[in-house]
Image (cartoon, rainbow, N blue to C red):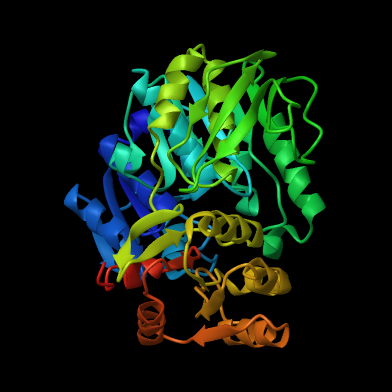
Length: 453
């Protein structure tokens, strides 16, 4: 079934509140489908879907799938989920989130899939913005909310489909992109992959899935993978190793950076970024390299990149309290946390207070010590209760254990057990010139709504 045939079909989404699944539900509605979905809590994504016609069921129940033509479920849904089991008993077609994404992607002439352990959402949004600014009207599937497109999905024409390509459980292997982007490869999702070598093998398979008529865009500065010889390849670099390079990098006091691009050996006009952090240079030049090879002029690309102001929860300045800046960042891997703290230190004149909410017990267990050391450059630090996502608790793996081990390593840390303690910790550090950095992929959005920003 293709998205052209979604019209008048009833599609039910299990876990519809997830950022990716809610985006797919939004696209399905735009294609004329009747959409329903269930989840254990109601969030802003679900409220937005209800406003455009979706039916929402709080909690998972067998009867929720009655009448559905297709049931779509995410990686967070277990095989013994009562709705998934009921759908299979009834003979309803079931699709993994990644399979459904591919059903949609297959309808577009040019599929741009952005992969990597870090930076997928920002880079996908950057590419989307460039295409929109240049009048190419892409359809977009995003793992975050981006105000420029009105949320986490955009319905455009049938030429371009821009999507994140998530490696977890090999989800991105369902895609056959025209353009495959590999930003970086790091040790993550070890509950599934077990080793970094397995992760690299998966990314190699993703690269090999690139259509013969397309090309691969990859980071030249990291030890990624040996890219397949039978595909066109373009690399980007901050070390002058690529087809597109960023050189003469200048960092500003506000945490932004500018650089001069070298394209095919020729130096071009300086590009000034509006998003914070040196790591965003990589996201920018990857986006630029994709669009240059689509025939867009570097001048137009640079103009669009300069006015890109970022995606929600990606080092987002959400406001201030008593002169203290509050920043919300999705960073949930040690390397991402280190980059966020390093960026915040550039402009923080007072103290930097970092609060980290770990995401899943398995990730916390596999990267336990790394998480502790990733917060070492903050002036003060705290750990908030683990966001479980799809998992059950693991013995000895809690935010309290992280704080205890941090204190043993002479990195003083607080343990925050609930929203009241979290709120009080933030307010206690809300003094002029301080920065409060909320790190993690969990539910910090809830506390931000309660702060007197």
